[in-house]
Amino acid sequence: MRSSELKAKIKGKVAIVGIGNIIRGDDGLGPKFIELMKSRGLAAHLFDCGTAPENYIFPILSTSCDTVILIDAADMGIAPGGIKIFALEEIANVSFSTHNPSPRLFTDLLRTGKDDLNIFVVSMQPKTTTLGSPMSAEVLRGLDTLGDAFSEALNA
Image: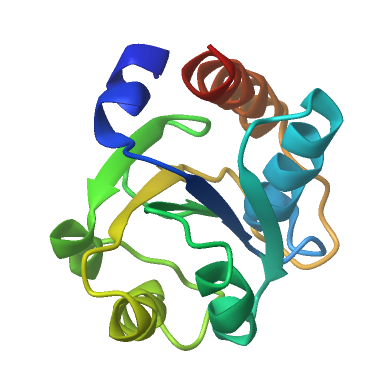
C-alpha cells in the first residue's frame, strides 16, 4: 500500500477505527494498528474498538471528523499480509468473520449521525484467526507497511 493511494481517499479531519479480537491471532490487526499509531503520534483520532465498534459511534462522531477509516482483518482470498482498500459498497463481498454486527451496519449508523461522512475500510488478509494464536509474521510485516503508509499520509 502506498501513502499516496491513502492520501487521495482522505478529506479533512480523520478518525481511525481499529476493529478485531486480540485473542484470535491476526484478527487483532485493528487494535494492534491503533497501538502502533499511538506510539508514532499519528495526526488522527484513534479508536481501539475491539469487537464492538458500535459502542464507539458517539465518541467517533464527537470528534467532528470528516473521514473515518476502519482497519480490520478480512478474508479476501489473497496472500496473508496483503492489504486492500474498500469502498463501503464493496464490503458486502468480504468476510469479517469475528464481528457482529457487520461493519456495514456500523458504518450505516455512523452516517445516520453525519450523512456526508467519508468512510472506507483498509483490510489485511489474516493467516490465522484461531483462538489463542499469536499474530503471524506475515501480518506483523504488513502492519509495519500499513503503519508507514498512514504515517506518511497523515503526518506529512
